[in-house]
Length: 220
Image (cartoon, rainbow, N blue to C red; front, side, top):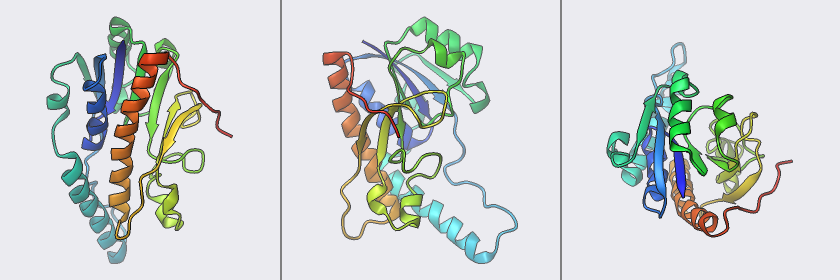
């Protein structure tokens, strides 16, 4: 079976996609360059917000590096056909031609911008996005941050769903959440959610290889 990977360039993205590379499938990848892991400090904010901003992203980097490492995508995807692109080129003719040449039977997406027509229209029926958040409760961005902001850490999880033109709105294939343990911080739970997603992705691929479909439910 031919599986096409759409991956962001951050270690959390490549960490999950390594599970596909370890499975019994033929792979190719489109890798989109993401923003720096530690973003630039916004201007015109007060000292308290600046201190919290620096602390938040530095602590996230420490936790994620300890779990996901720092391997570059060029190392992770070195043995398969790979197209590297910037965000503005994700939906380009070059990407369309790359996808057509590989002719995938299944697409797994994690960490890239919204895929639009005509690229969306040439993808196979099953094109699954890994969304870091339990949809439909937490859609959009920072979806592993907001559960903590609203004092609902039990809603920190992941959703595997079909992609459709509207963001994070396709039929749900699977959802999972990590085990919460005493002493976990926001970044520990977020990283554990990604680790759980990688484990579950392996099982989902095995099911698809066996049955060529998944049971799905629509989002309300």
